[in-house]
Amino acid sequence: IAYSVYPDHQTASERVADLFTNVLSSGSPTVLGLATGSTPLQVYGELCRRHRNDGLSFSQASSFNLDEYLGLESGHPQSYRHFMREHLFDHVDIDLARTHLPDVHADDAQSASDEYERQLQQSGGVDLQLLGIGTNGHIGFNEPGTKKDSLTRVVDLAPSTIDSNQRFFESPDQVPRQAITMGIASIMRAKQIVLLATGQAKAAAVAGAIQGPISADNPASYLQSHPHVHFVLDESAASELKP
Ligand code: F6R
View 1 (cartoon, rainbow, N blue to C red):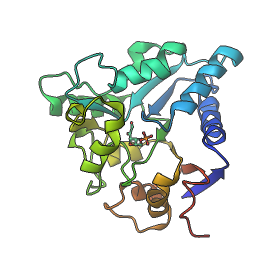
View 2: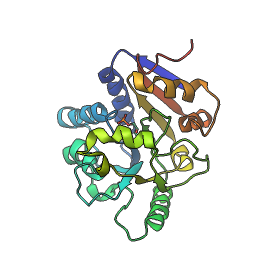
View 3: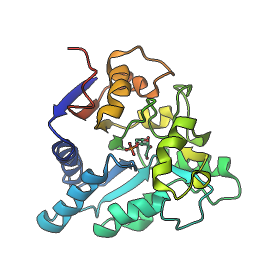
C-alpha cells in the first residue's frame, strides 16, 4: 500500500481534498464514497472552502456514505445523515436527492441493506472512496472478523467501537450498538481509495494494515489487494511503520 506522511492533520486533509478536487473537476458525473467521524472533518471543511472561494462544484456528483447507525431517531444530531449535512452537504451545491446513506428507518433493515448494495452497483461504481480507520483496524463498520466477500449488511459494533463513540453521546446507554455498513467487497469495488488516519491511537492499526498479513483480524489489511489505494497519514499515525 502506498502511503504519504504529512506533518499535521490539516496538511494531510488538504492533500485528500486535492484528490476530491481532481475527480470533481473532471466535468463528468462522479460518484463519491464518503465517511464520517472526526478524521474527515478538515477534508470536508477544505472542500466547503474551495466551493465558496474557488468555485469547486458538486453539481455533477452523487455520493454514498459508508455507514449509518441503527436505532437513532430520524434527524438525531449524531446520525450520519445529520453529520453529512452539517459538515458538507448543506454548504455545497450537491443535489441532496443524490446523496445516499443506508436507510436505517425501514421496517426490514436487511432488505434496506440489500437495496443500498443494489443502488451502489447501479450507480456505476464509486470513483473515489474516502476511509477512516478504527483503532481495531475497522473500515466502515467492518469490525475484526469480517470476511473479504462481505456486502452491505446489519452489523453489531465492537465493544471498543462503542467505547470510542461514547464521546459523542450524553450517556453510554445512548450509544448505538448496531449499524448498517457497506461490506469489504462493496468498498473494494471503488476505483480509487484514500484512507486518512491521524494521531497515535491509529498507529498500530495503520502499521498492521500496511505491513501486516492480509487478515480478518485487521480489516483494513484487505486494502493491500486493491490496485489503487493510498494512505494519507500524519506523523503520529505513521509512527509504528517499519522503515
Ligand atoms: C465512519 C466510519 C468509521 C470511522 C472510524 C474512525 O463513517 O466508517 O470507520 O472512519 O471509526 O473514526 P474517527 O475518524 O472518528 O476516528
